[in-house]
Image (cartoon, rainbow, N blue to C red):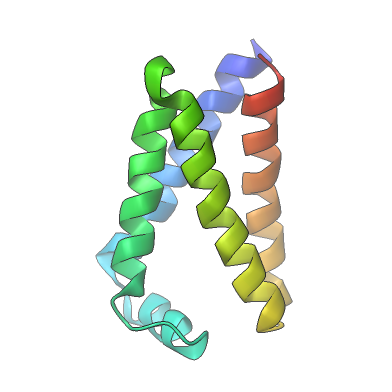
Length: 106
């Protein structure tokens, strides 16, 4: 039961984050630019998050989706740590916990 719930929580969280990034809100774009990325980077990040969500939702793509989500979250965590914007650590920690639950609760 924990495994199924964690899968769908992770899928929902990644899909929501993906949509928010893919919309390209001015605040999101300015954050990416402040972190040293081009302003279109939010679209790439959002797309990768949505692809990861779809892959995780499909049993045959789950491992690839978990890998992709792990890479996106690791890159985000590294960026936040290097830029010392620690207010973003808690949401990233939730993603890490959900990825771990999906991976290790099977």
